[in-house]
Amino acid sequence: MKDSLALIGFEWAGPQLRAWAFDGEGEILSSVQLREEPVAGHADWAGRLRYHLSEWLGTAPDVPVIGSGDVSASLLKSGGIQLNAPLPLAQLPGQLGMAGSIHLVPWIGQLAPPDLTCGAEAILFGLEDANGAICIVGQHTRHCVVEHGRLLEFSTEITAELRDLLLSHGTMSLQAPGPQTFDMQVFKDWIERALDTDDSPPVFSVEAAIRRGALLPANKAAALAGLMIGADVAAHYDPGDEVLLVADGPLLEAYGFALDALGADVEETSAVEALQDGLFEIADLAGLLGED
Image (cartoon, rainbow, N blue to C red):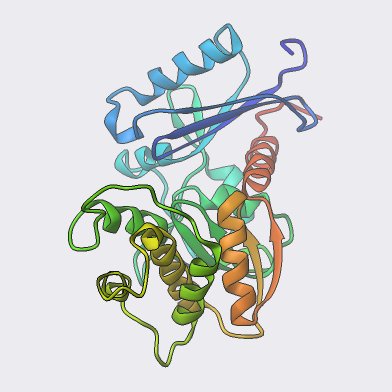
């Protein structure tokens, strides 16, 4: 791998750090994924990153390293260039920031209402000629509108994070921790309730249903996830909308069902693959791979 290695791309988002080794054509030679403290918990996150890359590769990388995610918050704190939507995504390769020798993809901001892409910009870049409504799903969900390569507007929802917080603190928390059973029918039922915008139930309805015996306590997490995902989808899309859903695994299935139930015209693609493509293409266009 060492002879063909041309680029290291990585994303550090929340407690997850993942990286990919690319050859000069953009093919992935190797990858690594591990749990780490969030970037904010490291006074020297760049040093910690270099340590992990050296452990993974067996030696310190002697090729360019480009990253996205929470690490790019350092560009805002250092007074770096601030990019705001509407913005041609083609500007990103010319606006990379630096943290030591590490190249960082800058976040794109929005002024009204205030918002930040927080890593979604690299995914959008990897979607090539995608146009229209784009729903990028992860720990946070970004609802974006792109036209002819320009990010016009976006909205960040912390749906999955809010669900986790509700289940761990306060009135909705799992007071007597017991096994939670993911019941797909329960999940779908609560999605469909949330999609009825004329009579959408409040979040507390899940707790009330349990206390009244209408919902098994073991299905609380499934019901709450369905309710919150359904409400998220209903707030941003209408029946008949064409939506590109960018996600992986259970989140792809969950949001795909919600959008189908709404009556949207859904196309699906992988968020991880879009991120990989985005990091490589940005690096290539920024000249990090040398002359063709």
